[in-house]
Length: 396
Image 1 (cartoon, rainbow, N blue to C red):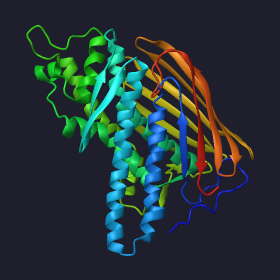
Image 2: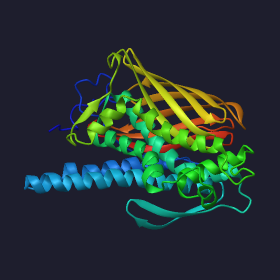
Image 3: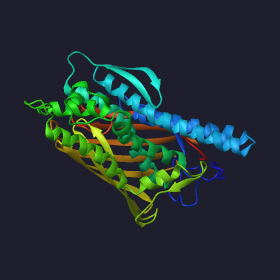
């Protein structure tokens, strides 16, 4: 059993970057972001899941003497925790995006495996508002996937429950269109009854471009059918193209007090290169993201490439981490630039500052600015972006 809590330096705001001999990284991070930023849903529910998981594996579980009972209980607890963290972040994503456009999202009832909600948008809401409110759920899921993978490469290892959570978040869209709300996109009633989040998301995006859903003869637009099927296929194949997804799946069966290290195709955690992929739903259609993780002199740098369809959505992102790593401060820098339908060319620049208040406790500040355009989890409008929060790093 790994006894986390003894190996991180107590003299630095961040754990040492030479992490090959350290236990997996663990923090509990809560934040408040203005403008109904999806980070509120992603980070806070992720932390809630970690707290619930650790309550059993580090508290309740060891007190159960019968090994069989303990293992069964742990399996049930782990499944419930991961499933809840995935599902609630999805619903909070809907809620935040609905509020962003002046609407409300109500949770009416829960029947396994889904939560039934009701969206109320202003009478003058736009097709963009409609699409944004629906995509908020899946955005929260894929934002979590992205950030867990970033932390894996940033700190070189994470516990199995976090990797399992990333895998669960990846599965929600494929499960939704194939099991929760399966439809035939070639049937006209699919688009008139608008069943399920995938249809609710795709229809306003298509209409916003001035394209017909139903043709003059009453059949469904063949291009729309193709887009629906291509999005569904991409949500599966693009995730399968990521070698990390298989390790995330393997983490489901791993020891809960152990973890996995970041995988580099070339080099190692001091100087090396690895990559990751994730799918996303956006107000411009489906997105395919490819992220390169480059380690150089123990510092992490990222480049991300984004391609969206069926409407123009190209982007590139740059990230630099641990630029300032002193006894009190640590700083990251991120830049995104894009060319998009409706919004044109734009950028988002932000910096994260971690200030060590006392040993394991950090004050977290993010500040930045973005122009009009779509970036995963952010507001559409131009303006200042950022958040404030606290972070507790286990074992520091």
